[in-house]
Image (cartoon, rainbow, N blue to C red; front, side, top):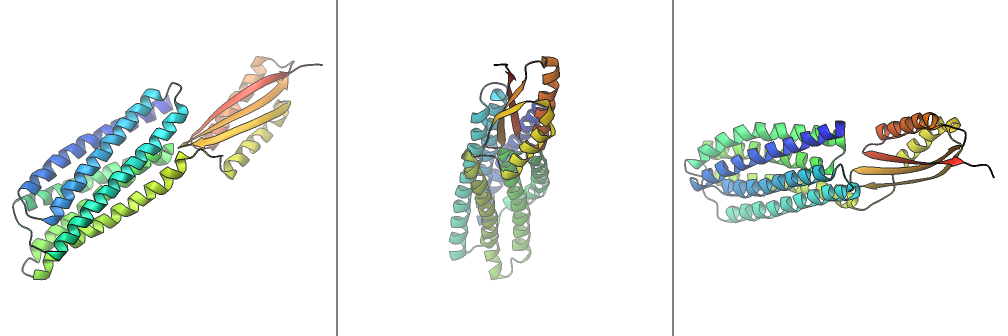
Length: 299
């Protein structure tokens, strides 16, 4: 029930982000059409790529929900990380576009103008709060569920909110200092700062998601946790036949094979299994525990 509620929360949050992003994209493009500003051009391209990233993440969340209750456990972990990588690639594309545009306008500086500048200023104020809210929401869910997809979304929305604030400051500064020729450089310099923030976010996504795409054994701390829980139940089973574990994406899969005395009834064994499973899943983030059992037979 809890996992289903978490999935519903992810999908609802993703859908809200898509709707908000689409409205932001339409208004930003409208502002660009009625303004002459390098930073508004960069903002429009950035907003388009961010909308694609949010849309892609929402589609991945829906796909994960469809397979969450079936046989796609391992594939779902890969899907989360692949979605994060695509988001990171889009952020790098955004970085290149903004950086190239900024360099061009540093070489040939010009003053910002047009009613679209004022439209954009209003949009930046509204969406700095909207994107900040989505950042905090996704960060909280990513921490609770150890989801790289939600973590990448939190990073993306932080970048968006950061960009909103910087663009607003850039526009206000350019208008307020328009009598000075050096103010023409405020637009492209602000764009480069935004590009730097995107680079940091993209590098963070690549460093985590590429590593998570590789199946690997559990961390030593988690392995110690498994042994500690088994030690606490040492008197409840006869023999430990093996432990298999691996991490795939944000999920950890643990298989434990225990042998019980033949005279023990299922009603005695099941509480031990249930307690061991629940303890491990609570102690190891993202764990899915399977316990196989055999009975001891007399020779």
